[in-house]
Length: 110
Length: 121
Image (tube, rainbow over the protein chains, first blue to last red):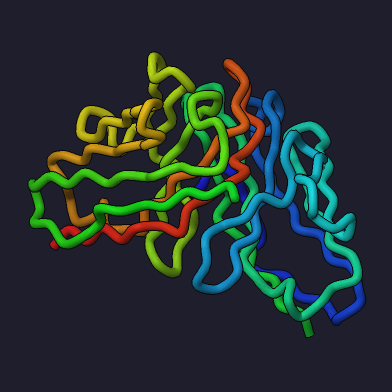
């Protein structure tokens, strides 16, 4: 059981927008910074968002991150078939003194 | 090109030991915190350990504390994970990742290796 809760799957049509939620607690999301990762099938994870809402250089602005209280959200606009992947949120947990990840969300582009 | 390349994975018996390594290139290795993250195929990411830039501070997940040791060689640009008393549940792909940690704060992991597979059976 993950410290962070994500929906197992989400889906949306190509060209549309989707959001993926990540719910935590005061000891993790509520007091630390959230990052998001994309893992395409058979590959290593890649950083999409760090420091709650910052994009690494080269990442398209179709990807966005936000945080409110003990929850965070990843938004993806202009969905493409190449966005089909597993998405993970992560943060530090001050009570556990450990990095924690969500269980992952599988995105399907219809 | 910024790159991390893991090696050393393999098949080991329960109770055995294995050392996996991660060779870094294309960036100033000694300036970054580093992490190990593992993943059972088909399952989610699980954080294992991290080490600060000069190797003086290490942190472990409870599941590996006392059995695994993270270390680094900044002169050789190499990160290592020594795994002892291995269990079947340690079977996973092990990724090394560059951290965006600054002191107490963790901002994310921005560069990942391709992973090395450890099978305990």
